[in-house]
Amino acid sequence: MGAANAPRAYRVVGGSGDPVDETVCDIQQSFVLNGRLFGVEFSGGVDGTYKFVRTPSISGLHWSAGGRYHIEFPDGAGKQGTMTTEGGGTTTAGSQSRTTSGGEHFTLTPVAGCGGAP
Picture 1 (cartoon, rainbow, N blue to C red):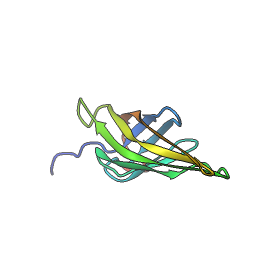
Picture 2: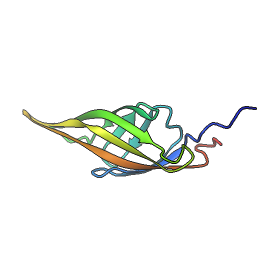
Picture 3: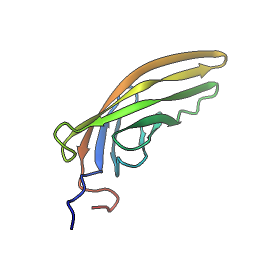
Picture 4: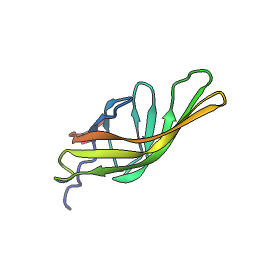
């Protein structure tokens, strides 16, 4: 048998405006982090893109956002890592729009498995 694959299931904690604390079963595949207000889809892998896929349902308001993310494991994939995002978004209320930019930081901690997976 070949060498065991590096862990792919991680507990992801972080974010500042709408924090998350959840387990992602396979960071190599597309995954969604769900805060209380927003759901953000990540393309998968250690470098990729993200976009809002769920926003609050408030009449007259609309949010959109997206950008890039990067995951690093300085001590190896079996150890704790970090994910950073950079990008921007637009909030629209009626005919008024506001554009913002910035980034978020998350900690990734390997977990044994997810959803019955080893």
